[in-house]
Length: 511
Image 1 (tube, helix red, strand yellow):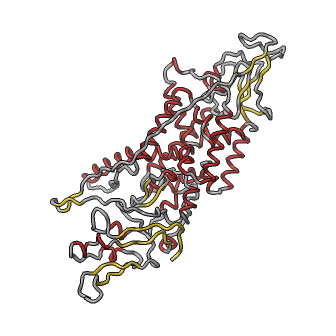
Image 2 (cartoon, helix red, strand yellow; image 1 turned 180 degrees about the vertical axis):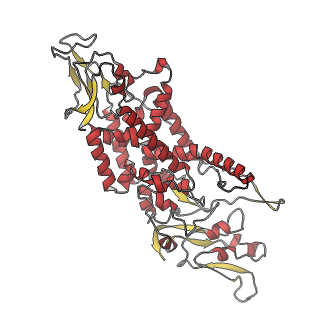
Image 3 (cartoon, one colour; image 1 turned 45 degrees about the horizontal axis):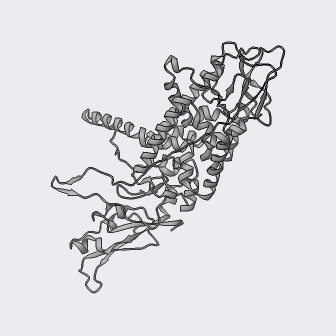
């Protein structure tokens, strides 16, 4: 019963959280957005004390339920492990292995140092919720969008507009490759060995694991009923049940309840048993008169666990590549050259981020804001220090003043909630005019596109030659009124580089 309840809740959480990354309309967040805010690391970074205390209390009472139910990456590994055990030969394929404490604590220490130092790329690689978000946004979302576009095509033929087409494009090649490599590595590990990542590399799993040592309810082995058949150990995806010595490593147990389901003797129950303050490194032979001796064990012998060497080598080559987009045709004759990304001395971060430093320290690169951005402005950064963290660019659209979706969905406090009125008064950057690219001067044609579409009226067209009022008019930017929305850059007809672009601000201010 407990296992079925756990599986039901895990499926609900997994499906709903996955939909958060697939739904490009942002409407799903109205119902299930709270599930993203329940993730442990985003709650810590957002200083969401209530959620953090609730998760810690849940772990103290019930064990690592978070890892087996709430964490989408953990549930995804369970799916991979279930697929790997579909054949009868591989169904009971796991085995007990001692804890590699040095590796778990070493990775956790490096993770905390990187978090405090603002090395967002390393934090993003190991954060479990963020890793799943990148997988869902880069690998699952395109198929979802293609399915939606197929329905939109069919609906249009039936004179219905219940669906509308959305663009499917590669936002960042390095982030795509990292998401693909993460999926392949985790799938292989889970297929072969179950929860290897959760119990060796995951920093959230390590923190909650050592809290779970003192949990009130946990799987307990009744030595009077156990016949040392080993079914529980061979079914334990966390490799934490030492059936020969009737011991469970509760720091690695994810409370999946699989051991309760497979035990034919009813020797394992989910109840209360005081945990030792220190996990023993040596185990003595059981000397209880009423308990059956484990098979192959000699009375009075002493067993010492030898520490296995663990070597891990991972290399990930990521390189920048030009993004191939389909050519657009104007009137069926002239091809329109795609816009190129201008060089920005300071990257642009969304309104509500407060500053580039605040954004970098809190963002876990989960890509949730990227997935819901309707204007295709947000895309992952390729900067090594902020790799995979979103930044803004205006080649495909601009940041419309009435849109606050990225601030509405961010669970980590990297983008604070903001109203449309506050957004219209928040300066995230300012426009810079490039004289050599401006069409009135290069082609001798009147333009003024940037001034016509500026929502704040920060751009004014003036004569290019002050002494000749009838000369071609060029834009002048009032940097005190410009909010950096990018409408001028996006709608500038100059190709391949716009004649006006937005330079980001390190710290946002109110205009």
